[in-house]
Image (cartoon, rainbow, N blue to C red):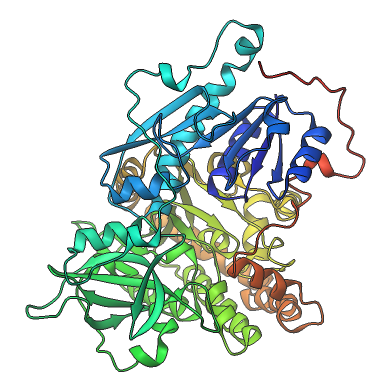
Length: 576
C-alpha cells in the first residue's frame, strides 16, 4: 500500500515505522504536520491508501480524515484519551499500559479501534518506555491494522467502536500541568520524586529550583544519602549529575534546564550550575547511577564495559572518561571485551547541547570530535583481545562508527541505526568512518548509506554486512544471549588464531594507509564545517538544541515532493 506518515517530527517511533513498513513492501512517504494546508497538499500529491499518524501534537484536519482513512497511534490503552497518556500512566503507577491504533474522527482519541497492544510497565523514564515498549506495541498494532484495510474497504470487517469495546478501562485525562508534577521535597519519597521526574523526562521536565534559581529537572536515578541529611539538600556531585536528598534517600539529577538563562535547554546539571556546584564534594557509591561501569564474567574471561550517556550524546569530558575506561579494561587479563552502551542508545556521537552552550561552539565541536576519535582509536588499537560492540539501543552518526571500531557488532532486534552525518548541517563526519565503513560494506554501498540519510534497521544492516548479528526480541533476551555468546567466544579454541589474524590485518592496513591519515583527511573536512564560511552546521545544531518547530519536511523523507514526482491516478476512498 501507499502509506503517508503524518507526524510532528521524525522521532524514534516514526523512524521505526518508516523503516519497517518499507521492509514490508509498502511505499512510504513522510510529511511533517506543519499546517493544515501543507498536510492537505501532501495528501493530494501522494494519494495514499492509508495515512498513519504516529506522533502528533494537534488534531488531524477534518478535511483529511473525512476523505481518507487516517489511523492514529495513541500511546495509551483503549479508552485512554488526552495528550499526556504516558505521563499520567507513570505518575499514577500503572502496572500495565498499552498503545492503540484508532481511526481519526471529530472527537480526539475516541474513534473506532483498529488494533491495540498492552505491556507491563517498568520503572523507567517516559522516553525510555516510549522508545521500547510503545514502539514495539505500535509496530505490531499498525501491522495488524494495515492487514484489515482491504477487508474494511470491502465491507467484510469493521473496527470496534470505543463504546462497544469490552471492559475498556481508559478514560479522558486533561493535559498534565506542572502543578500535577510539583515535587514536595519535605514529604515526597524517593519513589515519588523519581516517578514525577520520569513522567516528565524528555519533555517538559519538572519545574523546580536549585541553588535558589528556577529550573526544570530531568534524568533522575535513585541514590543513597547518609543519615541526618535534610530533604531537598544538594549533597554532592559526580560526573555531570548532582545528588539531592529526599525524605528516605536521595536522587541523582543528571540534567537540568535553567529558566531565563543564556542557555535555555537541557544541560548536565553540573554544567548548567557550574559555579554553584564547583565546591560540592565529589561523591562515590550508587554504582548503578554512574554513567560508566565495568564488570567481568565469573571466570574472568569476559569484561563488560557499560556506558550509558543520556540520549546517547557524548561530550568531550565523557569521551575522555570512556577512552580511559577502555584503556583500563583493555589492560585486564580478559580475552573478550564487550562494550554494552546504554539501554536506550548505544551512542549518538558528539554532544550538541554542550557544544551549543560553550563560549566557542566551534572550538568545543573540534575538541569533542577529536575526543570521539580518541575513543574509536582506543578500540581500533586494542589488538590483544577480541572486542564486541553490543547495541542494546539505537545509534546515530558517529555513534554508529564507534560501534564499527569493534571487531564484532551485535544489535538487538528493532534497533535503528542512522549511520550518516549530513542531516546535521551537511557535516562530513569523522570517527574513522572513511576507514571503517568501506572495509565493512565496500565503497559503493558505503556511499549509498551515507547519501541516503535514512534510518537502517539492524537486520537490514546485517544483510548489508554493516554489522554482524541481530538477535533478542527484548532487552533481557538480548543481554542474556550477549553473555552466552561472549563466553563462547572466550572459550573458543580458535580465539588465539582470530586475535593473531586481527593483529596481522591491523598491521597490514596501517602499512597501506595509517589511521592518522584517515583522521587527518576527515578532520580537514570537519574543520570547514566548524570554522568555514558555510554556517549550515551551526544553524542546524542551534535549531536541534532549542527544538525549533519544523518548517518543512526534508526531501529525502517526503518522496511525494521530489522533483518530477507524478502521483498515479487518484484512488480516493471515502471514509464511511
